[in-house]
Image (cartoon, rainbow over all chains, first blue to last red):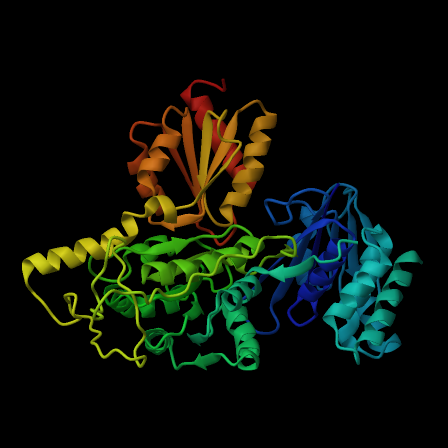
Length: 178
Length: 381
């Protein structure tokens, strides 16, 4: 089993944390996982990209080559990475901020979901968009178990912020199943 | 569920390794991509009763470390290329004054400010010859998060055992990589402390068979002199050619004569291989996937991984590679350690594969270069 995911957006959206959470959950489910990132010298803004490789055997080259899942939370990220996705891969874009141009003839499963809107209005917490996105990714792929994700969330958020993030995860999961 | 496994970053593993090794002083100035080490230590050292000191720059940082080490602390820092450049003069001081130090250099793309968040194995030669004058040095290069932990412990052990600065040359790709970390079933690592044992009156720079003088830290009962001037056994300046020759031979010999113990090499699928890939750091991971892909295509490839960069074990590399059909060396720079490897190999065919574009070399880049070279040499066998 080999699964590669790339998450992309704007610095400050929690893209790298989203990748960290997925990698951690994969470890808890007994897989091997490697998480890396690419970011610019800016401390905020600019493009941000997080990657996860999940395998059931040793991971040597730790970076994503052709993602099975690609998340794009900004148009810039979409323009940069959309072409890399594997045939029949899953492309998750934010339905309000990303136009999926240039996909004519490509065999890609596009899921345009209101990720940022769900975080902002339904959950009243823009900062939880990354965890909503994580819920959508897991909802579409079932690559890790809910229990493992919840353990990863508990390990990454303080007690005060945890219930909101668990809600955000399930909200994202539901977006994916609609 | 695998219960003891944690997701850990390479930089974090270095900080944990330093704590395990008994490091008690950090003097540094934060710089990408090493900053997570300083952050972790700044949080943990005060709780442990150890010292974290942020200095005004890297020159002051290494000065503070040297002072701390002289009075008995295991001292270290974390930096990157630009900061490592500023430390060079005092690395030479620490080498000649025989002050143990650990410098973790999480290498980023250079020269100068370069690409601060991108990888390059650009400081291989700076680690060896960045400071002026003849000296020897130890440099280690981990390829995984778990190895970053153990290599950091080993760096402290070697620094104390050989009374020398030790450089941990870590690729940004390993420093920022997160992967599973579980040492709960590993044997307890050996921790080496400073040797204080001496016979008769303490002569601060008199060494026995090992070439390494015992070290009574300053302020602990012995009064003596440290200097960057070339000095005799008593620690004072000498220009006596015989004494200068003796001290230079001892300073270089205490490391080079122990290359068998210091220079660690890992062999992967090596014995039956007729194509050898020599690699270190993050690139060794790409090389591992490349050799597996090559074997699927019928090319018997193996890897010689350099866990220790300096001292370079020329004789062992030559012996291991003798008779190989081709030795390839992917390196994330314009060709640094490959110059040394080429010299070690003699007549064995050698293919350096260099890439300096801010990206980790991909496995297929290595695979394609080797297949093309084999084809040029007369087809795959």
